Image (cartoon, rainbow, N blue to C red):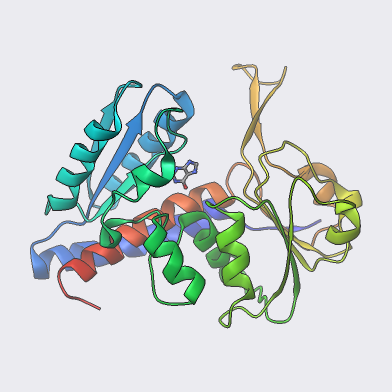
Amino acid sequence: MAILLDGNRTAEKIELNMKTQIEAFEETTGIKPGLAGIVVGDNPASASYVRRKRRRATAIGMFFEQLKLPESTSMAEIKERIDALNRDERVHGILVQLPLPDHLDPHDVIDLIAIEKDVDGLTTLNQGLLYRGKPCLMPCTPKGILRLLDEYDITTEGKNVVVVGRSELVGRPLATVLAGRSRNATVTVVHTRTREVRQITKLADIVAIAAGKAHMLDASHFKQDVVIVDAGMNSIPSDKTKSGKRLVGDVDFESASKVASHITPVPGGVGPMTVCMLLENTFEAARLACGEP
Ligand code: GUN
């Protein structure tokens, strides 16, 4: 049976440590790290994600401001709100929860965020720095995946890593960093137009998947002792739960865990690491804002 890559436990450990550091930071500087979360419209999943971010931020001593804007919010209105947060000294990090309503271009909205407050690492400028291998605020899910691998002493040096999914949020930045000089993996990106996915994933030492497709991969896609990191979060019908729904990843955990050496559970794997890295980026932004390295 595979070893579980426990995101809950790892995130809890990092957050406990961060809480102590934040207390010390506040004592010496008088500054409380602050995060603002913007939700536009009534997407229940977005509201729930931002609630979770708020709970975790306040639990470690951060200030959190939530902006809930109506579905009809115009680009001019959202610009006004983000400009105000860019100027707000209590706020060191700004996140715009995605997806946005169709009339708002997510690139245009995200690029309104000041680069030093872009704790999701999604502005054009931060992405440019990432692709150049320069210091930057890194997107939270790829950062969380790498931290989880580090926690379990899984190196990527010289390994065949297959990234499934080419999203701006996860797949693309993850593949870039893995192939870079700090991680030295041989990276293959699999996406919706890839033929013979199984032939490619079968060669992987490590598979990281963020495809948004429940149970896309099962045991037959992997070689023995593969490391599987599953960033998928899909709600599927279930007659075993009260809500009638169940959260599953992009990998069929039950079969895949029989061939893997290490595997993330869903929930409790990548999800908590993403939130934890958002908090870490916010603390980093707060430190940089007051001139600390
Ligand atoms: N929607 C799904 N994942 C994310 C994320 O990591 N950040 C933001 N802002 N929105 C998301």
